[in-house]
Image (cartoon, rainbow, N blue to C red):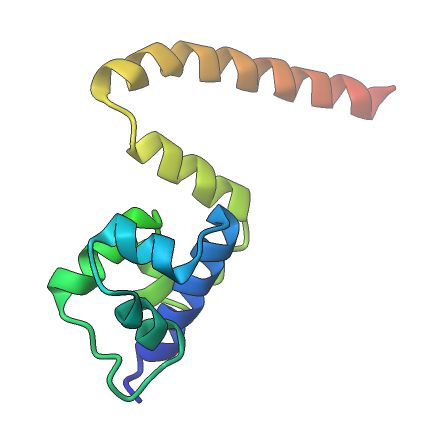
Length: 119
């Protein structure tokens, strides 16, 4: 078994579960055979996927590659990772529109939190 097999299997299973997709649905999204997904998830000896197979699976499931390549860096803040992923998928125009909204929202949330503490 390769050292990346378990983190890869775990990441695919987590993402597939989060998205409520079957192995067949993931395979369809990634334009690959369902047996490839099964091999990756089950840490098969044959689970040494080619980049041409692995890349679309990771993209289809929006998996953070750090989950696979740096599994020791546990997600201490999973919501922050989700937020970072969403932001990374924004166009420049979308990001430009979101920046002032996020700034104001954070300002409001932080000022409300301070008020809650002093009461």
